[in-house]
Length: 192
Image (cartoon, rainbow, N blue to C red; front, side, top):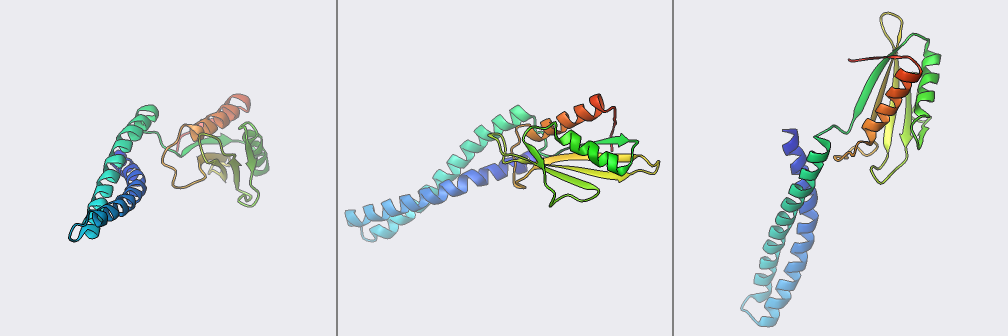
């Protein structure tokens, strides 16, 4: 179902703009041609033919681009999600956990904390735009478990909520942070 919804979104994104532009241009050309040729109701008939032709061209273009780009994307990414997360156990206090999160985010190139979006238990960082994405938002949530340990959850998602295609930048962000926290700082990764 998710694949069908993804392909439908791609179809709409590609077919609507192209179809509207093609329909308007073909309606204009059809109307002018019908008027010049002197048909009985030439301008209206030509314009209607142009509108239908443009709609058909938009659907054909949208279908072709959906098959090509959607197929390539699904093949390359194997339908991965655009949002990635991981959780870790930490035996220190909340202030140490906060500092650990700040150290971890410094491992991700092009990333800076956003103090306006951060609080005592949530730290938010934004990664700059690249050719692969419009930027990523990385958030750390620090909570205390029943055993008194700190639970650090890191989540990376696109800045633009409408992002459908992800070329692995969010997964890469979480992998860099996980590698740092587990290998260099000795934290234990947990599954929730």
